[in-house]
Image (cartoon, rainbow, N blue to C red):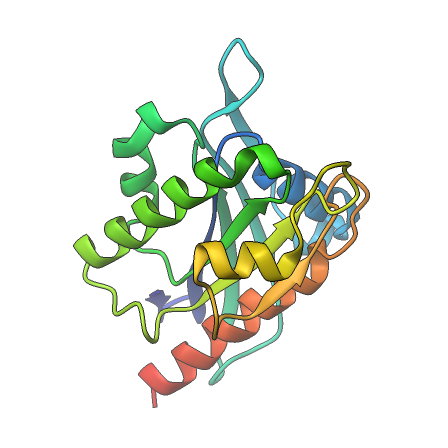
Length: 195
């Protein structure tokens, strides 16, 4: 959270985290395409030759007011590939909340577990308390064949107590529900912090 008192702006950061090809970029692309231009900034993507996000996607959304401050949400994604661990940690710096995008396909369970573990590790190293830090879980690709049940994914990832949503980001299902929950969780934390 960064407050620009001169402009009356409250800058908040939400990072979409998850394994490679889980749908993080797809979420941001859908949000960008369906958000009125006056409420959003440009979508900036840095990609490798394989068309995967290398560093981040950045989308700025403007919403109502909090304590007479105008919140501006900056949405980022991290690169999902394991060898970009340092980049993922760097992008998590200064984050106010995380959307963890789970790839529901059965063959991706180990990738989801590894990504969840490294996310928690990075957040702890950055000084966040995992028991109170806003993490929203999105079970993406629910429209694909051979997906694990949500109850099995919940059990394997041990995400009880976190807000959770089913999604098919390519079609937009669950995308805005997830975003709204993340924004509300972050705003809840901010209201407590700036009382």
